[in-house]
Image 1 (tube, one colour):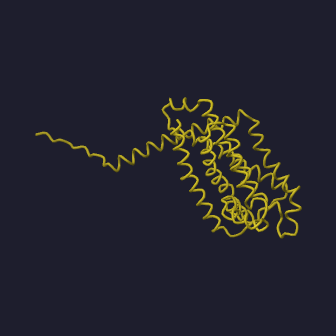
Image 2: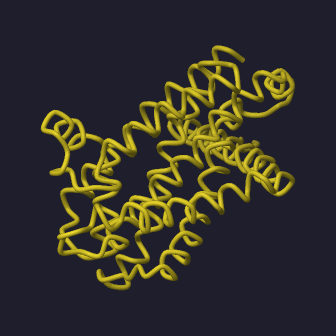
Image 3: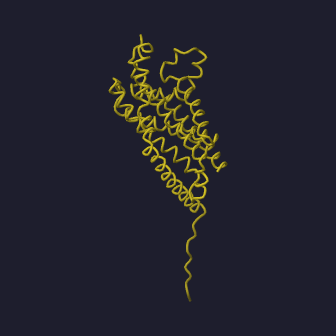
Length: 276
């Protein structure tokens, strides 16, 4: 008499988890590959890298030495200490705006058709662009802080908040890069993407507490500046650098980051799959 060995069957739940893990590894691998491909563009185009490096220096010189005397006059703070967190956000938002421009260029030159013929996750094309520009902006934070320290900026909030500051900037720029990605997949033209992202970034940056205190603005502008996500992340970075309350700004900033990554990121991915 023979004994039949019955092999245990995997449960549907375990199979679903295994499938999700496989899909995630596939997506992560393809995204890492596309991130490396996009980082190589910076290496092979030193002009783009030079503009990323020169941008914060120009704005620090411009606002601190040209406008700083007028804006900081009669106030109880060193203007460069007030200015640098805003410059960090502004300069790196301009950097991640390249996400949408690069995606639009890929669409315009037909690279999407080539990607579609490869066995790769389609959303990795967007993810690679977003991750590459975020890494460049993250490196730019340290360069900007080094220049700011030379110009006289000092940290007064402690070591741990100073170490957290670049991570907050990078997280917000990663989220905002999805806004740029949505613009890039919506216009299909690099020139239009460039002008569109410009008109998104400029009003949000200047109609906030980036360069001046909100109370100096007209009342109707204050209402917009107070709900502007740039105001909250700049104030959070400012308090991390100089000391101050963090809880309220941290929660609002986390909300905007989650909204842009989940909401706008999903919309950009859906739009990209529709056109590809």
